[in-house]
Image (cartoon, rainbow, N blue to C red; front, side, top):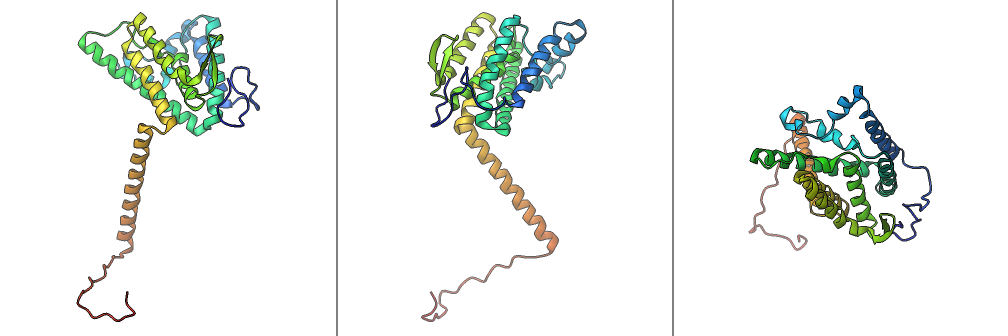
Length: 264
């Protein structure tokens, strides 16, 4: 893959990006690898399962699952799991270097958090109506949802880059925004996990919106500015009260007062 910014060095799949890999991305890969491994031991399997997104969020009050579920790796074939970690490294490294540490984790927190909350609310409504799937949240497990956000971010900031789909078919990166939704829909047809499908759609859409300065980002910025203004006004009012100062308004001007030629 190659970045679409002028003068940028090759990045991505074998692009040879300069410098050591970001430490945060290595930590992310390490956590996924550890949680994947812990599921194969009887003594630690329960610890991992309690942190995977499930109906226990509303049935037993396990709200922490909304924050921990992206880091609990899905149990897949060992080779495919390692390949998925490699892909997370490729995309995560490039997105991290483009955004920087603070913006990267802010994007991840919003994308993953909103996706999890959406899926939980939708699944709860489906269960109440009797339409809930027994395979709830299977489309949003571990490395899958992490990779969804990272690919959406890469496709947004490097839209003109070329990605080899299945390592064979060259496609523009921006097309992967739609492909992610398409693949999620194909997964929904198999699992009937409608909540997970909507969660993925929210993750893709929100990531795109945040990185393009779209409507949501604009609303959040305006809301933050309003809050900061209210806080500042409250502080000024409190300071005036403590100092005993009082603002005196000037008397109104009288229109019929004679004016000299030097007064404008």
